Image (tube, rainbow, N blue to C red; front, side, top):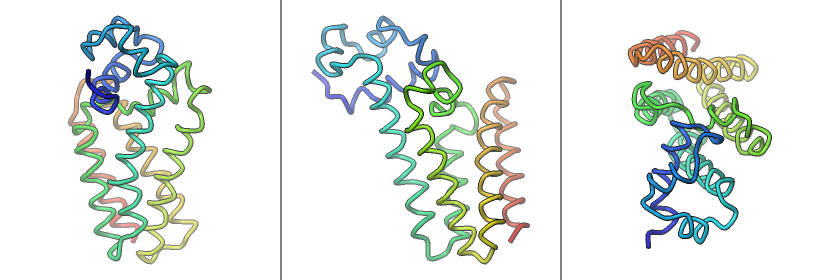
Length: 183
């Protein structure tokens, strides 16, 4: 039998596509190739544990690929540029929804509020820190970081709603220009 870690990408896609409430055990079973008994063996607390594990996996990816590089960068401007590259790759240039955003807006928001809050707060703080180290005032850095994260999230939603990934790409280009001009 496959381990939990191997199942997380498939679980994430089910939650992305159907939301937490719509992610039935039948859909999860189909996506993972495991029966309900095997799923409960791996995730004794059921769907809530599956979603928590998926959110933790996403958090780990963002920590390794965005937050830590932004916090540790000797060249903050290069780290911010790399952040934009990583975001475009992760969200498949606007073709993949933000599961943390889906959870933040769904009925399960309160159940996962800590993980959702932490995801966004750490992203904003890491970006604001990099912007400050690149010579901006701390308050302006924080405001710009909030703007960038908000616009990325909005661009993901708009690109998906319009079924036009180019909306996301244009927004990312505009944000890169905005950040460069603010320096």
